[in-house]
Structure formats: C-alpha cells, structure tokens
Length: 282
Image 1 (cartoon, rainbow, N blue to C red):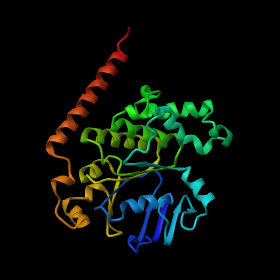
Image 2: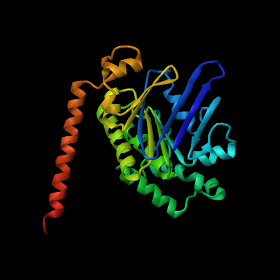
Image 3: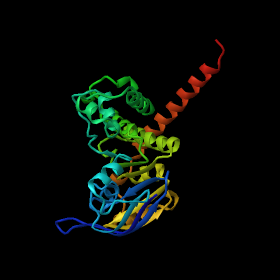
Image 4: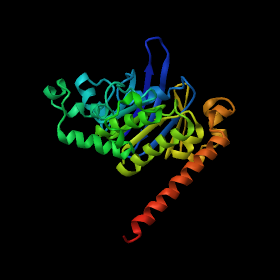
C-alpha cells in the first residue's frame, strides 16, 4: 500500500509541487497520472521513492515512512521500487544484458560489483526479464544500437531484474512514436497483470490513460482534481484537469489509432497461426 496523508512538497525556490495530497494506492493497481507540465504529476511519482523529498505530511510505502527516511532506509526502499524514465538512462557503450544486470546491484556483494561480476542466478534473472519484454535476442547487442522503443524495453527489463513491488514510470512513452508507445504500454500492462506489481505511470496522451489504466489520477497545480476509473474520465473531466479544451496534441490521431488497431489485429492473427501450428500433429 502507498499512502499519501496531506503530503506537501515545496521546492527550495518556493514552488509548490504537491499541495495537501491525500490518497491510497492499493497493491497491484495500474494507475495513470495525468496533468499539464507543472501540475505535480512527476513530483507525485518521484516522491514515492524519495527522489523528491516530502516537506509536509506523511508518505508511506508498505508501512515504511518515506518522509524523514534516513539514507540507509531510502536505499532499502529504492531496492524495491523500480523507476523508468523518459530518457531510458541506459549506458550505450555496454551490452543490453549488462544494462539489465544493473538492476541486480542492490543484491550483489560489494566485491563482485566492484569488478562488474554477477552470480549465475542474477544473469538468469536478467535473461528472464529480457524474455518478458520480448528482446532476449538483443542481450549481447550494445544498447546504443537499439531503437528508442527497444531501449525503453531494456529499461523495463532492468527494473524487473530488481524484483520490485512497485514500478514507477515517469513519461515513459513521451519520446516514442504511437505504435511503439502502445507496445511499451502493453508491456507494462502485461507485467502488472501477470506479476501483480503496483504500477504508476505518468502520461500525456489522454486516450492512452483511458485505454490502459485501472485508475486515473488527475493533477492540477499540485492537487488531485480527479481520482476514478477510466470510464468516468470523459472529455469534460479532462477539461477540468487541464483547465482548457482538449487539443489534437492531447490524443492520438485517428490515423495513428488505425495503425495501432492494425498492429493489434496482425499480432492476434500471428498468435492464431502459431497456436494452430502447435495443435497440428507432426
């Protein structure tokens, strides 16, 4: 359980990032946070693992206080909370596998980590993570040689290698084209469904939020102005969150949506062919 109790974040400049936020996020939920730039959605997500310090109220993750936590306590907490960034944050000159193994550093003895060595069990976990996001064949390729979508999938695999109880994703698809954005969101959705990992994602595209979230939280000026299921988040609600009418930049175009629908139809057809092949006696 993640619990915000009248949480306030005020930056050194005096800017208020969060203004009296109170909410609970249950284990296993898939939550999407939406709002304009500066609305507080990134502050909300980054406060959960202590990247942004809480200046007032209480914030607990699995009954552990994030507010006022000491460095050692934060390190233990962060080992259970994976975070995915818009910019991927991979080391381009090393292999995909080595990037994913970074997620195992918290569980690796210091002497081994100093020499860049990992136990066989950690390597197996890294391969499992890569297989889960569908790019295990890229394990020995340099990260810099991958496309943007593939790099984001490596970032997801690195987080999975941590064995997290919570995944935070801060604008994970902002720099991706629409079909690739849907692929990344489907990866996160599947991981949430199959592993039950609490997942909290910041998004800009409102239709993506409605399509993938179990619950949508709308932020405006540091406050929660909407908290409910996607079915209740109609255009009028989003206008309330954004303080203006929706524009074409807030949703995928019909052309892009048609492309995504075509990709999904092709994937379903490929799956049917594969299942028929397996069912046919040799």
